[in-house]
Amino acid sequence: MKTLSYLPDDYRELCAIDLEKNKRSALYINLLGVLITLVMAIVMNTIIPLSSLFEGDVGVGSLLLRIVVLAVLLVGYIVLHDLTHGFAMKLCGARKVVYGFSGMYAFAGCHDFFSKNVYLIISLAPVVFWGIIINIVCFLVPSTWFWIFYIIQIANIAGSAGDYYVIFHFLFLPDDILVYDTGTAMTIYSAQK
Image 1 (cartoon, rainbow, N blue to C red):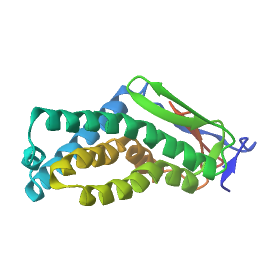
Image 2 (cartoon, rainbow, N blue to C red):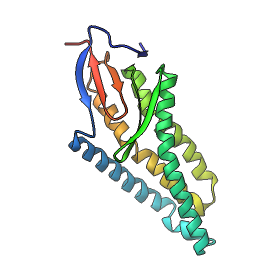
Image 3 (cartoon, helix red, strand yellow):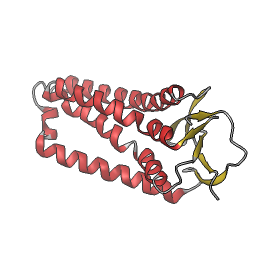
């Protein structure tokens, strides 16, 4: 079973995940994102110092260009992250994907039901796909641009904290679950009593 457009008759709601309503879970996810950011930045700073960002042509114009590029790339990454979730949903059989913003979160959702394994792929698609691409770019750019792209990599990995939360939560759920993800909340169904 991959993706269904309907909920089977014998399935019942098992649980729901709604980070807009569950402020405690949202707080934990944001704290996890901050922790990942700090660890990645501190570890990489010991390998390639952040000061390399200011080496070479350190004129105001050059530094301003790097900051503008970083800002554009961060916004672009947020959009690409959720487009990638949506693309994965479509590849897995979703009929129609909806996109939007809710509070400080961007989202992709649909009105189909995904099996557990399929939804795990959908959850991990952006962090894996963009993680590989960004990693390659990090090692191709000059050292003065490394941290610009590494910050995007941090955003990729730390910004996927909500996806990690879902994956961790799913480890304790039955294998037969179906996930209904509207983008702002997900409801998990199971045939098991």
